[in-house]
Length: 99
Image (tube, rainbow, N blue to C red; front, top):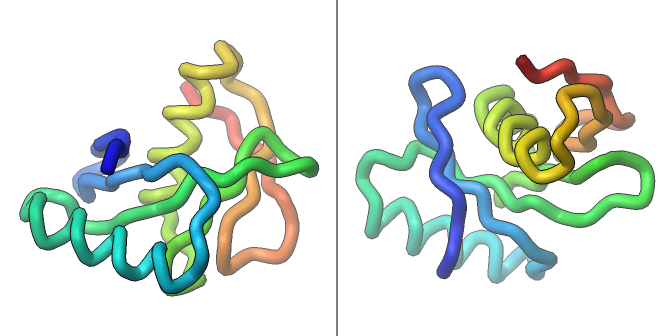
């Protein structure tokens, strides 16, 4: 399984890109966390029509560090530091400014 490993502020996050069923998200997250003891959480980078990207956590919760990790990855890909992200656990896209 390919993933991006990012340390946004002390909690190492794995970001997996793609659309997966809820069951597969749980399996993928468990596998990554078992095989990589330094990784503390796993987020899933999904496409969005409303924002630059959507973050989905396997449990459906909001995770600030995973959101920061995805913001970093998106900023590098789109070569911009101003964009909107969606995240599980919140109802609407939020503007992020990534330095």
